[in-house]
Image 1 (cartoon, rainbow, N blue to C red):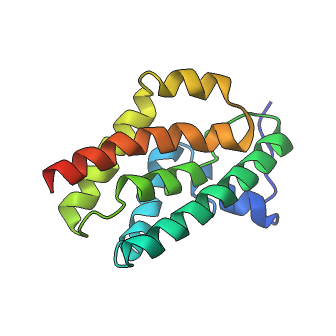
Image 2: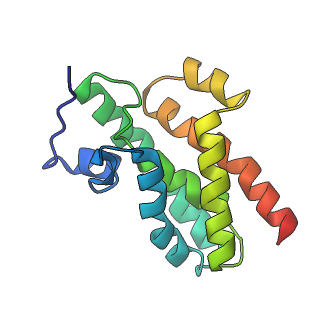
Length: 152
């Protein structure tokens, strides 16, 4: 059965990354790529403001992703990509803005988000609801951020 989304619901619109998650192929990658210009803009904020915006986006994501997953009856439906927006923002926190650093962040984040190495895979299976949807992307973003901080 195909999930039916209600795009007039602003919570679902956000959870679907402003509709990007509805693309038929690689919605997670599409969501990450759509997030890149937004994150690029955030990268010009002072680190504290950036962190506050991302923390707010995380909290909002827990709510909108949970509401959307319950509405369509599928936990972490591939079309839900708000978590990719927040994950990329965490991966690029306090990194000097640049085309190469953003491209590296996008690529590394997608690899870890797709592979879900331990303990990400374990938590992805055990934590449900909006928090579970958001948490695996946060955990994929942290090593990317650490690596980018190390090399930049």
